[in-house]
Length: 290
Image (cartoon, rainbow, N blue to C red; front, side):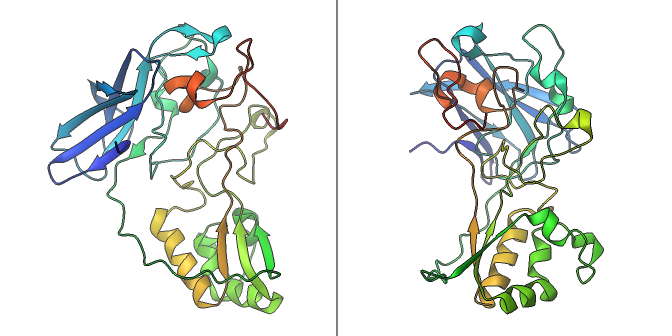
């Protein structure tokens, strides 16, 4: 089975992405600040939609993104544009939060390169899996749904630098509060990286709940600046207190929104394959959420 994303080895990194309809795919390598593109390398088609390339000499911490080219016909669900830097759907870490910018939704040929507007994925060797533990939560127990940022943002017993983060949930004051309530499990509202809907920034507002995801594995740096280990440590502390943790993941829509939305990842790789469409080529919207 082909491993997609950036696979770090001792010798370098293997980059792999999937697109059935793209004619060409590239990986863009950026400097340590994620600001300057220092190399753009074309991936080779390996069959069944997989495009891959091994780059020797690169290691953990490498910042990168993908680009894809092919037909551009939005009315038929084709959005290929090599000027759009795309986040790896299999990224496990990104270097900054997403910030909505109208240029991310420009049609092909209308705007410039979007690399300066996009977070960069960070290649990383995943930590070793933890030993599977039996679930703590019992049927009929109390589940507490928590918006991570709002839950501790103004809590005076949480260190200021931790307020509004996943790490804050492991603070003694928070754990004791949950225990007093008799909570059997906390359900964390989405903590993977998301982007604001386009109508919010002009109003000075933001999507505080995270139900507009771009990544499905990379955590939002605003909520978990310590990445995967921050989440692991918090889960361990809560489990030690007898509290299970449930992660809320969103799969019925993404931050790429409708036909007027930004091209950030899946749309740019293979819109027809990753999203459901009606027979006339329009995006299906069965849920009414975008």
